[in-house]
Image 1 (tube, rainbow, N blue to C red):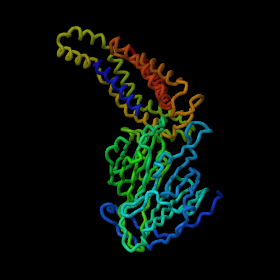
Image 2: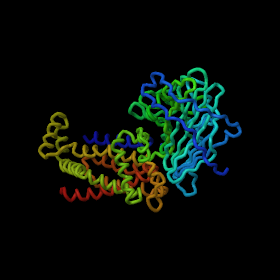
Image 3: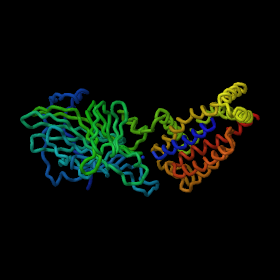
Image 4: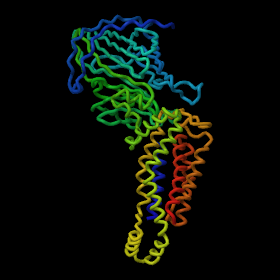
Length: 532
């Protein structure tokens, strides 16, 4: 029994370690030309062509090349976005409320700049007619600035020489990360056009930056009721295609997300591949549409480029909050994260919020812990008799096991009583571990004095060392039925954990430290109740 318990502890440490390894002056905007709403795209449209809308084609006048290749800047209360006329695409988006480093002078987080320079984020292509990836679109504005709850539009027009036009209309809100995108195809030719509109996203296959923010970077999408994640190695030999109930698709790292969300079943399929330039590429295809001569048809998506804040993601709908992947115990981790944010609203400090949650969890698990320590105490009391039985029946294993079971029964001791209550707490620990490790709320969040970033390690290693000391004290106080050699080996665990925690986020170290202190107090209390 002792050997199995010792092996279980060692395996637990191994599992925990593996988890840790595994994130120009402003111009007045021209009013957009009136365009009827696009008819809803049927969910079965991915299987068969949709009928053309009875909407007249919208005439678009070509704009001189010198006027259309300028970038367009859109500024809201949350970000400053730069759009390119090439592909009518997003060139960069600067987040106003997030910085790359934890310093007031640090540069803000900029998303989109690591895309393939030849194929920028939200570039548009088509299947069924000739729309170049880098088609030059004519914008209807140069600078757009929104404030006080405003909503504005930016329109890009592309006029082909083959009898069709493509109009991309972005709609922005001053206080939201959501951007609405309507892509309208107008057929000015003499023949019907059968096509699928495609929005393209590209991003590096391998991130060379050592910042832990990129440790989980890759392609993510929500399809068929589950989150799908792909790295470069997953599509190195062949592309992956998803075509079942797709709600969104995009690119995410540990803290930020760029995604295309379906609107009225507007995503029929997503193909993830590694392109010729070595970038990961996600091609988001609409259901196939048929546009008759003189008519037009539109496909609508919602775009999200912003932080993986669980409240912000939840508001977007389409299960976008699933992009915050909290591992096997997500069902526990998300309530813990909501609780963390709830207490922060009242105390204004995430470190204090962590301490409050730790205390609450300790109170909730007190009955189980009490039972565990009592069982270990009882087992400790009968160790002399256990040793006598082992010596007496050392040549008869069956007789020894029978005598030991009778000893347990006579003293009303459950040999598993000290293990099971602890096992119940393991999912909660890993859930909180994930919530603290991947929560953007803790990023650059200060606690006190030298701890200025709960998502980063303690710069002076003070809390991990104090944590190791408290773990050693706790280990010494814990009742044990192990032999002296095993007890000495167990006392080495605080040293192992201290070295492991040196590089852990200080928020997680804080949780473990406070938990140890509470456990020491709890053991002192139980030792008084359970007299020898």
